[in-house]
Image (cartoon, rainbow, N blue to C red; front, top):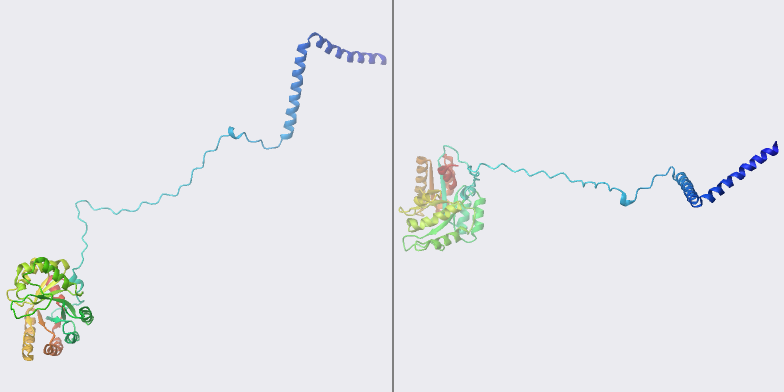
Amino acid sequence: MAVRKGRKTQTRRKAAPSLLRRVLHGHGATALVAVAVFTALSVGAMIGWWGASHVAGRTPAPPPQAARTAPPPTPAVQPPPAPEPEVAALPPADVPPPVVSVAPTWRRNALAFTPVAGKPMVAIVIDDMGVDARRSAKIIALPPPLTTSFLSYATNLAAQARAAHAAGHELLLHMPMEPSGAGYDPGPDVLLTAMSDDAIRTRLRQSLSSFSGYVGINNHMGSRFTSDERAMHTVMRELHGDGLLFLDSLTSARSVGVKVASAEGVPNLVRNVFIDDSPDPTAIREQLRRIAEHARRTGSAIAIGHPRDTTIAALAEWLPAMRAEGFQFVPISALAKAKYGQ
């Protein structure tokens, strides 16, 4: 029995090669193709198995760069827009813009002074200041407030004017103007009726620039010039442009100073009493009495004097006595404010 089994086994082993030979022998070309396909499939399967076993657990490689889809660009962060500036609402077209009021020069240069209601006011104006520096200094030393009117050709003018203002006195420019009589000398810088308008303006402007801080001008002499309307209009237009007032010294009854100043819109005042037409002490005392009488009757008075020894002595005695009687001495601007409103 053992021998039989061995033969059957041997017979089967021999049968397989015989079948392959028959296939190869009967179908040689087809067989070769089949074998090649079988071999390729077997090798491909083995390579796939080997590759899978080596890449298991690894992160897959990214696709080629060209095949990837680029992520969208991150937009730049823009700063928040700045707030728009606030624009003030414009008034309707038919509403005029507000007018900014600027005080005229005479008000800005006026002494700070508040009159006492019910007391007569007296403004003492001293002309010809600055030429005689020694006597001018004595006027400056009198109790304030006086109104000191400086000639434009005075020596060391600016310093003297500052000293007067620092002592509590108000300032005027004493402007030389042409007198009627041939025997009077008004000094340099005089305004003449024979001048053209341009020449009058030029000379006036030179005098106005000689110092600063004054509230206006009053005429030095000028009986002929102040009677000439054409010449006075030229002067008043300049004063109006500069915001100054005009005090008419009234050296002539024919003066048109107040008339022309009013027509040109220039604040104006007029002298009531001359203190020292005569240097005699008795005559001066009489004029001081007239000042007090005028102030009692009308509520105010404007008096003009000069830096003379008899005038200085009389004022030094009279000013304190009049204050004791209830009078108040005021700068010229206080009377202008009383006339034109505060």
